[in-house]
Image (cartoon, rainbow, N blue to C red; front, side):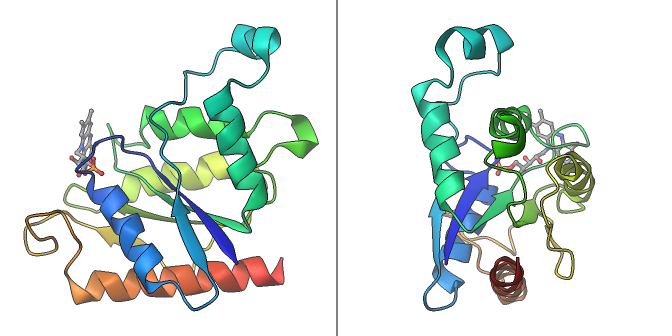
Length: 180
Ligand SMILES: Cc1cc2nc3c(=O)[nH]c(=O)nc-3n(C[C@H](O)[C@H](O)[C@H](O)COP(=O)(O)O)c2cc1C
């Protein structure tokens, strides 16, 4: 089982990317979680797509999603929504009509930040994913309110409560992908 993980934050010290590293650590045997950085993804531009197709970093992301059995997304909340970085990547992944890589791909999400653990951004993300017809894991919801008690100085998730939630989320994603 191959899970492709995407962080909506480009920051090297991102708490959301750190949570994805936890997901990789706690994934069940036989499951790999690979984080695919979005730093090189250009802004979506229809003209660019018409002229060159998918630029190399976009093609690599699209191929990685195609090759994966499921996608795990962690995003901060920016102004009550997902980050532009994440939305931009999803826009590229939605191109290609019925063959769009994100179509029908099982997705699970989590978020770190603010007082409510990116609650509103995750609600928006669920709306965005409606368009892709992706089965979205909803039995486990992970909202990690950022606080020093949850992370160590290296931004590693240390709260056992959240590590357990992330583990259950990954297991649920694996089950969803197995059934679809
Ligand atoms: C432009 C911007 C907008 C933000 N808006 C919100 C917001 O609406 N709600 C919230 O809880 N946090 C908001 N934050 C705080 C981030 O969610 C928080 O810093 C988060 O930890 C960043 O995630 P990262 O550590 O993965 O980069 C905002 C931060 C930035 C830079």
